[in-house]
Length: 444
Image 1 (cartoon, one colour):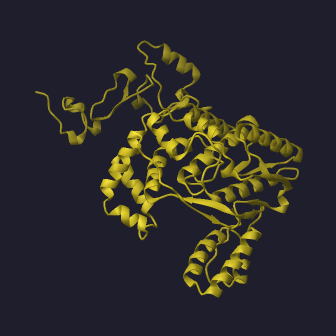
Image 2 (cartoon, helix red, strand yellow):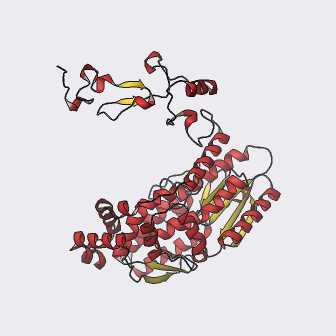
Image 3 (cartoon, rainbow, N blue to C red):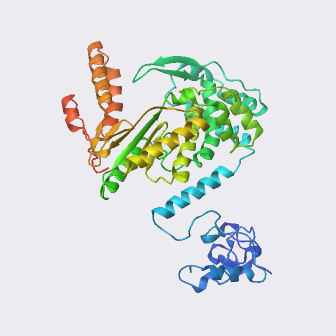
């Protein structure tokens, strides 16, 4: 009688002494693998893994012989040269990295996703969207009103998003004037839940299409990572012979100039789920110009819109030292003539394909510093931008004069957190804030 092994040890009930996690078989042919409870993994190498202390790198000749072997399975493995678009296996260096990024980008842009409305309106995803929307809003009337019957409200919202009856409410619009005039659109509480639920699913899809040197609104990126990357490459390139220059560009009224038709072509290149496209269309019409500042989907879509320029810089022009934070772009180079050609190329592309134009651009030696992501960056140090310091002095003086100590404390907590990433010890002393520890980061 066959000995039955408990399933807690893994393996099939009828595998006898060869069942369980201690008897894992790793050398089966691809067509001989199965879905038993234990580990019965397929191997693309005809030689047993037990004969080698470490994996053997197979040559192209070995691969041909293996494919010609009788009974060879045509399934791809997850390693080595069988990975489609993986670049040169086992290679290293900057060229290999750029090639791998380019191939991954091509593969990410080629794939379409369908059947997304189910994960978007899933109960767990809706509850998570509710929690994210509630952060910092638990004393607002919108949250308190929605929370009382949150389970029913979330179910009704998910049903409306699925069947196409969801209609966003009217946003509350207001203007800010720091540092320049901007129109902000604040959605009702329920509509922010809907956008969080949508973006939690489609966000990673579009994130995979972005190149590593785009730093805005991405996990693990941000202003500080952008400043560090620029300074690190400035130091590296400054060691080469010849002067180093920086091209700095800025799009004019970027969010207000995004063409919906061009943006929808990028969206439909990745998503084929009709219900999801219908849901996106309620938030972003197919016709018109401009996306509202303050919406969660605006951050994602504005980022992928400028991703067209990223791919042009890296894939078409072959630039390796470029950096983008939303609509601000910096390109490093040793020749001003070359940077002028780069500027003309991306300006033509932006105007013809995206309907964007530059509000300003400049080509200057890095010895004069590069204005980017709120800092003025040199190879040796970073300083806060002058206009940022002027605005901070004005706000501190205004809060002191009005006696608004709570608002002053919140402002200083945020502003000093930004300032500590620069060489700002003398600035803190001049503002009377030298008691707070400020970290110097001149090493990048």
